[in-house]
Image (cartoon, rainbow, N blue to C red; front, side):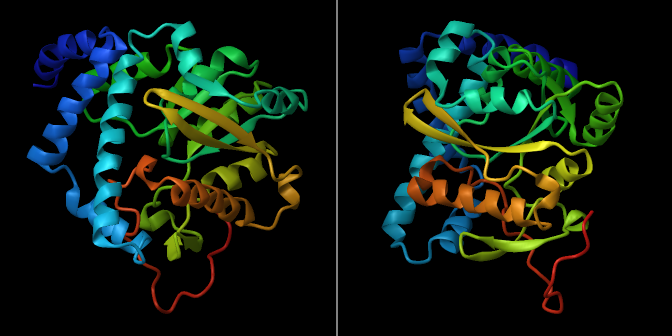
Length: 300
């Protein structure tokens, strides 16, 4: 059944990836109508998230953000498919970096890097940076149940040189690379809600007491890696501008959880500036802090 589904869907994806951009975005408009108005994909989750994050906004303002966020969601999902047919020159024109020299300077220090990014703007086309840095890139992702689509995602995201590793493969891969003297850049999408069993720290996000992912920070401290934040801004339909930030130098000297808290503050700043470009379909606040828990657990 998995193979049959893939065989039926893949030709459609291939055609989409070859559409010229004007027609490509008209198709995205059509997908938006289906996803938002017909299917109503995760509308309850999006509305609940927006109510929690922006209680001061009027229902009309939240509805405006909701609709715009679905349009962006459809664009971004299809842009991932577009990666199958996009050239290096085209993606470099559409996804630019303002200060790539910050990565080059960090590479000269001879340490691996944890690149922390949020589900904001375009996190799919960040893979284009691999052709412009020296260290190999490793994108951490959640394995897809359908093995054929999982392989396709591998091919798409590795097109520009990134190696995909699952969340379960992250620690073994870092350990093996460090033993072999291989310095890499590991991409962490670190702004979503961790599993209940993996919650080690609580902090504020969008004014809400929230569980915070701390894996990137703790791995960076364990292996003495540099940490960079990536802030992405959407400058037009199909165009993005990325900027690196490095607020900390000696990671091991930073108090536990300060890196993770600072990163979440950076994400929140982006969201408040233009909330329509955030991924609101994720159940960000499905877990709440137990009433008897007032401090963070020991470091993982």
